[in-house]
Image 1 (cartoon, rainbow over the protein chains, first blue to last red):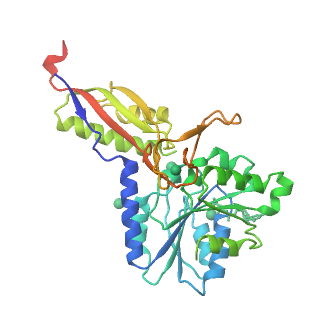
Image 2: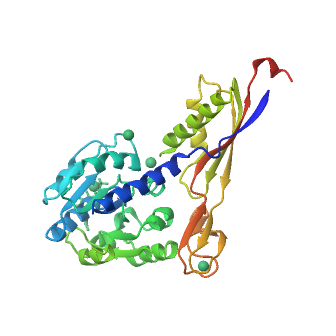
Image 3: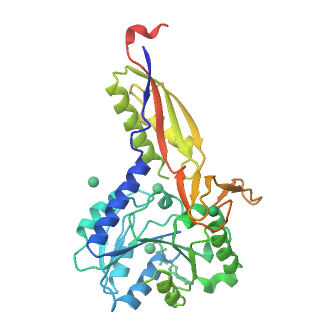
Length: 214
Length: 131
Ligand SMILES: Nc1nc2c(ncn2[C@@H]2O[C@H](COP(=O)(O)OP(=O)(O)OP(=O)(O)O)[C@@H](O)[C@H]2O)c(=O)[nH]1
Ligand SMILES: [Mg+2]
Ligand SMILES: [Zn+2]
Ligand SMILES: [Zn+2]
Ligand SMILES: [Zn+2]
């Protein structure tokens, strides 16, 4: 006998992730922890920005960081060098962090933290599909990835509350227009705040702190 | 990218549902992929076929449908599809995340963010296969 079985009410993986993310957000809020998910291209400067942010904010917040390195602790160690408590998540071969990873990691985050940065895996595609439950999402790109990074990855910008265009110092040699990249973000996602930075020197860090309302 | 983990979730739903209904064989699988996911349907199907090897779904036909995005504007109340801009630079048409009507309100996504198995067609009794 043939039969049609309706499965539409079964939870999809993506819906499941979103629900878990909401739960995590609630948990963090209850513990008085503000959280920022830092997404962005590989090598765009996510860790450097977190180092600068930590340095600049460490007197006002008790900062913790979760770093989603594939197999190493390099990023966690770099951020940790600034007096930040780091909690490593090794994602293995996964191309993004998901709420399930975070739900386990959150249990390890100690009680005395009130600001938590989560460095996502360098990737402009998947993280858009997998919110982690952070209060804010930030995406970092740099001019070294070329002029079409925003246009080619519109979804992640639409997901982001704040977009950083980093390595401004290299815009000229790379012949990439920072202004155009900013306009691209504004076209795709008018509500996203754009900050132009040179993370290496710390230029733009005050604007970033304002944009994140920290 | 993460097509494999999404396929794993879908394969689980298919086999669980089929077994619950007493399937001996899964004939067809109707997959729905949202326009706003980053999933490449061909890749999801590739992984599904891998995962279905040596199961009741091994020979199933997998059909997929793209579910267009539907949004609601917080300002003017517009409800409907997103505008799509054809940028000659890209081979892919990009959805514009601004309200097509007032261009200012923030948009809530109602549909198009998921990848689900809509339904499956199964064979429940081995005797009945010759029809
Ligand atoms: N010229 C220049 N280099 C920068 C700037 N910001 C970061 N870098 C350099 O870019 C390289 C990558 O920086 P990271 O902070 O490790 O980048 P990331 O995004 O964390 O990298 P992954 O985690 O590996 O994806 C390092 O060599 C940084 O020193 C900048 O503003 N200008
Ligand atoms: Mg890093
Ligand atoms: Zn678990
Ligand atoms: Zn992924
Ligand atoms: Zn509107």
